[in-house]
Image (cartoon, rainbow, N blue to C red; front, side, top):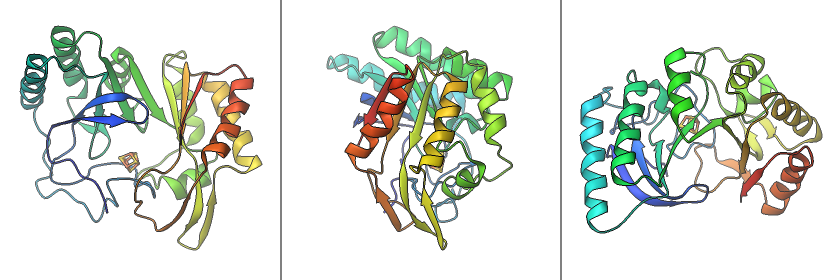
Length: 258
Ligand code: SF4
């Protein structure tokens, strides 16, 4: 069963990775909008969850919704650890992502200055100057790279346009380390193809990518909820820890969510 958020601002929810997280959904509230179609996406397949309206909420609607929610939370002395761009798809696809980032930061500063502004993104649009500059303003730009091998990305993430690991790595390097790399590890079978991004070859390619990108932190995680592809297996916490050790030995700060 897929999870879709029918509000602009949702939660706060308890996040494995971010603590108490107040979510901001920049995608349409009646469906999913993403330029990936990950086989593990909690929002389900793109084709099964097409938004009917296909409309984005405006910058001012989003600002008003967040303002109201933060004011209400402050009244009851409730403060989130994170204000997180997430929801029904890829937040950087919103045409006013940069302006919304500015609004979110100023509302955070007014109501809950200790909260970190986080963005969960698939990193496909970071070549756009406006998106890149907006992500650099976030406290945590958490950017996805699920494999260092193009063929694996094609199966796991099903990019809707052209995608090149080499080009994404080059773009991620532009953050000068001021970003968090997120990787989902999984194995299973989909469309008669075996999937496993934990093999020796995969981990070697992933560690090469990590070394090139040089992130300030790495988040690795496994499947937590129902996935649209049926034959996927959760990687055990122990295996994730073993992968984490390899990156830790290279000097990286790795957080594991099993
Ligand atoms: S990038 Fe995120 S929202 Fe898009 S399909 Fe993958 S998991 Fe879902």
